Amino acid sequence: MSPYFQDMLDGVAGIGPGYKGLSYDKLRVHLLSDLKRESQMLVDNYRSAWKETGCTIMADGWTDQRQRTLINFLVYCSKGLCFVKSVNASSMVKNASHLCNLFSEVIEWIGLNNIVHVVTDNAANYVAACRLINRKYDNIYWSPCAAHCLNLILKDISSMVHISNLATRASKITVFVYNHTVFLSWLRQRPHWREIIRPGATRFATVFITLKSIFDRKKELQQLVVDSIFTDHKLGRNATGRAVSAIILDCKFWDDCFTICKLVGPLIYLLRVVDADDKLSLGYIYEGMLRTEDAIKEMFRQSKTAY
Image 1 (tube, rainbow, N blue to C red):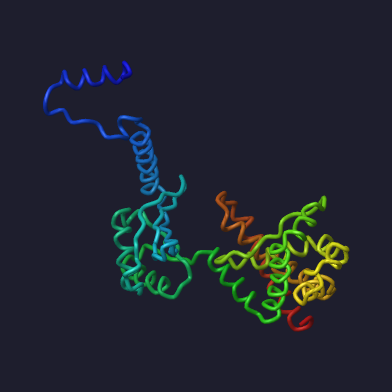
Image 2 (cartoon, one colour):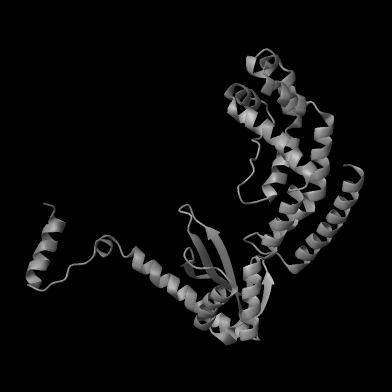
């Protein structure tokens, strides 16, 4: 038995009956309680700013890996962003009335006179709920999340037939390359090769980021399909290999990738600006908005001529 442990037992025995032992966490370290106290001090500091400058409530709905519908409530002010609470809304009917009640609970906790703004996504039930909030609290205004709106725009663009077909052809290249290590290893030996970015499940911007990623690997991909490692391999000669090779050697495929990436580039830029952790000044936002407006006009012009 270590001397330290023996001293501890002697100390407990000296206190006598009725001694309440410490928890496992308290016996090990005081880090958890120290962090809790530090976090509380930070939140209290933020709360003082809510009264001075006002604040914005932000609601973020999402689905976790267990398919539970969760709504996170956060408060933003000049001093920073603070998490308030997370609500499991899986069993709740997420209509305007119920969402309004959820927001009202948060509003009452933060303080009605401290809130000037509510930000949510652009779903119809949230829009309706925030209209009810504005009627109930006439000093609170609502605006949709800029990042969510931009994602919806990109979703609509990606749903266009010619762009959807282009993305499908690009996906065939990515799937084929990453499913066959012999070709992937050859590409990874190229001095300027970078991995192809694969589309995300929920971010529609990644469809266009993937197209740009594949376009940037045009040279290496074309070198692959004309090299003997591909042309002499049975995987390169089968139906799938020939189809992928035809796409990679199709000049119009690459021209379309270039055109789409140029047109959607300003939208991606603006999405990065508004969705970044480090918020830039409004000047950058307005710059991005102007670039986006020009891109959308150009996209409609191109869609009438190129496709």
